[in-house]
Image (tube, rainbow, N blue to C red):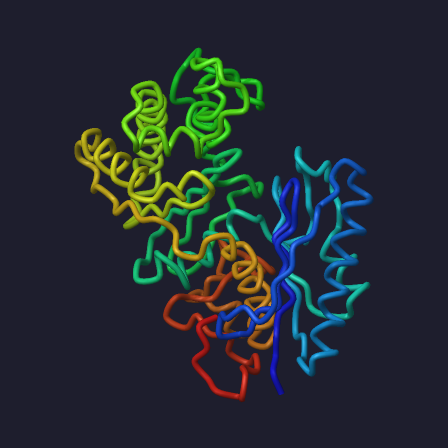
Length: 352
């Protein structure tokens, strides 16, 4: 009997969806529009319908769905299973875990999309051999996820990791949050494309265009790219002062530039570091599957906590005080498997 987790990574414009085996392999992938323009009610129904369709697909193919993991943007109360707020989707206090559980009849975990991706990169991807990892996703916006010993940190109100709203250029570009000079407004993929378009007079220019032209030696593109690198290094320096991690994993669309981004950011950060330890700067490995795999991790952790109530309340468990037992509480790195959760073929020691 093959077991799978139904996993959804919900974004502002699209959803990446998958059936994921407990060993971390993706059995099946789908993409669907989020349809945020239709309002939060329509988005909620869309999520439930897609999850239901994946569940039925699994059963049709002789697979056994054992849990559902959903990652959404914005503020998420993982313990309560509530999507508290999202600017991109319009969520306001949506009890998504309860709705999905009622609809699908399976255990459901709800988590923040970026922390889910961070969890996957820390356990399965570029940060898997380090105990303290900060994942930073650089796309339309910028956000981060801190993972310590395999456990994600959500903060007191579910808002930890909003690195994009560190002010790195006081009085600079206006940000969507209302401030000026936020990291997101200065160094996101959207910001890089917009800055180049304004200076070059070429409307529609993208960060990909800037990266390509900078690598080819174009002066203006090189200037815009370096400005973004310097702003990003300032933001990462602040993050390192706060978190003191072993590694910072860079993902998202801008990280697709590879060493054209990683190398300059690494050197810029090294120039800034004084008494702090310089973290490794690493490119993410899982690409756009990180969110789905992370959502699957959250779901499997839910099953583990339910199967091991004593372990879940132990002081040595990630679910100890300060990190309450919830669908978003991952297992420790020493045993990232899913104790009490059947694995394909019944074999122990699964990656997830």
